[in-house]
Amino acid sequence: MGSGKVDRRLRRARGAVFGVFTLNGFLLAMWVVHIPAITDRTGVSASLLGMFILLLAGAAIAGMRLAGPAADRFGSRTLVTVAASAISVTVLGPGLATGPVTLAIALVCFGIGNGALDVSMNTQAVHVERAYNRPIMSAFHAMFSGGGFAGSLVGAGAQHAGLSPQLTLTCSGVLGLGVTALLVPHLVHHHEPETSSRAERYDSATAIITADPGHAAVARTDRPVDRDQRRSARTRKVISLGAIAFVLLLAEGVAGDWSALQAREHLGATEADAALAFGAFSATMTLGRFLADRVSGAFGPVAIVRYGSLLAAAGFGVVIVSPWLPLTLLGWAMCGLGLAGGVPQIFSTAGNLGGTTAATDMSRVFTVGYLGLLAGPAMIGWLTAIVPLTTALLVPLILTLACAAAATTVSR
Image 1 (cartoon, rainbow, N blue to C red):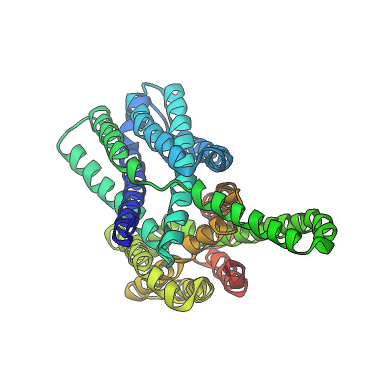
Image 2: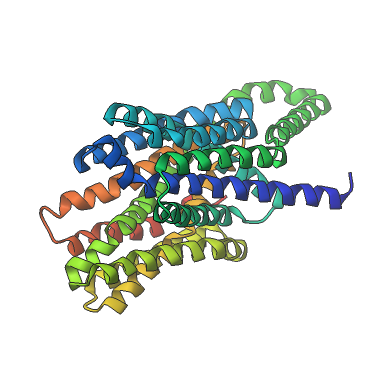
């Protein structure tokens, strides 16, 4: 097989993973933009909707936990096929729901599929990045953001045209199944490099024992101890990566959910002007994810996490002290740019710990990080009962500073 053919296959694999990330963002956005219409149809109140969103998140976490071992056993390509097909089908559920019970069931099914796809597509991304031998993980996450933006535009356009959620979500699901069928053949079989590396390690060990019989007994005695040490080191690494993911996603969740409200309450901005705060954050977040791979390739993942976290902390500081809307927008833009590249670097590190449990390791980091995304906005909400919203932003500021101090955790 010529090198040109290999390069072409890798480019196709990269394009396929780009497509999967985009599809995930698109389908998730199609549910989000139809929330008002769906809640009106099903008679779900705002308070009950909050519980249903937590239910969706809990189902996604369950999907993540199930997906890791499944991807290690059957391969992430197989799991991407199943999970992408599942969310393409289950995105129809909320549109077809007629009451709170059916909506809850639909969201559980959609959440499990979405969580499984999160883990499996990121596992695919790790293996494609490994084959490229240079950082490309952040660009995949940028495509997820791009898919979400496209989904919001399509959903808004469909509603403006008077199309029902049932029709729009059904068309989205059919599109998702078609796109999945086109992309899956180009995804990589990630078991091949793992099997090869295991064989190489086995051959190397056999060669040492054969070449020097005197060391055979030592090799057999030390191997279980080394294996336990490696397992312990891997566990510590996964816990540390999960903790950093928790902090960065907590800060991201706070910025995403509270930026507009903070601008309105702290500065007295109009709703239209306050919306610019979230726009500034999301725009630089997307831009930063497209740029982060080049920066990581030049300076390494530790620099991305360390200086990105410092930039995010500085952004929160600017927002807290700012008396003017333009300065506040600058602060939220700094937060978006600073937080853009850190989480992809963490997931990439988790997927490159070696061995045959890469997807399981990533699912554990995913789960802890996702809890941060949920906990951050809720924590700020609780704190606003005690202190002003702007003062509560000291929490993500302090935590991102701590994350900068612990940036060496993402070293490969």
